[in-house]
Image 1 (cartoon, one colour):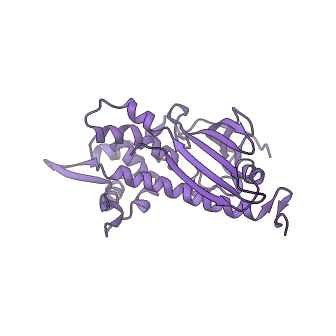
Image 2: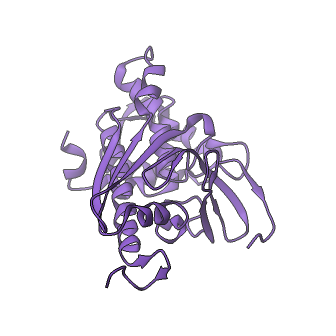
Image 3: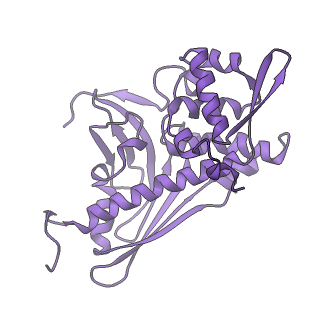
Length: 116
Length: 167
């Protein structure tokens, strides 16, 4: 379970912070796919897809195996936890920014605190 | 795995103000990195049940994120959330603003709906795979945009419309 985030090579948070990589995860959630099949669905080149896949693999979100000359990618079960943690991080960032705003504005406008 | 995501924190202001900042001032604090366009000119939460939650991109395009389902200022707020998905794929956010005195409010966030989606998929190949298949799109929808044509037929993942300069 701790494998994902602690892995030396990749950070799932960085891995999830890119729309193309999220698109790849979404595609793989439909089933295991070869690089070619993934590239066919995305507006980016195959080498770019391979780079994204490598990053996702380093982050522990996907795994691969060979089938003949092709490499088949699948989602790793542990990865879903990483996605959930990422979402918690999103809420955490939002909450921190919200608090900053709420505590430094008043109903009448920014800049003054009630009772100060 | 599919339990609601919960978060609680305290903020040093009255509940009324916290509710107002969360809703009508959402555009001042919602992280721009977690929007469809990445740099919206406005983020709007309309203050009523049925109110839209949407982002207006710099070019005027509007991206719907959700819809207000509970509007009880200053204590309770609920909305459907589908930042990057169809409304049918929405998860639910509920936020309680608990007054802790004159100038302190406890905020309780519950982001739920994953478990319902998980149940719907029971019967897929394996439970874990079902978890991925059913949950991942919704997690991704809550996180932000997904690139490419995989989420919709045209340029945008969410239903959107062009509007002139309303502001």
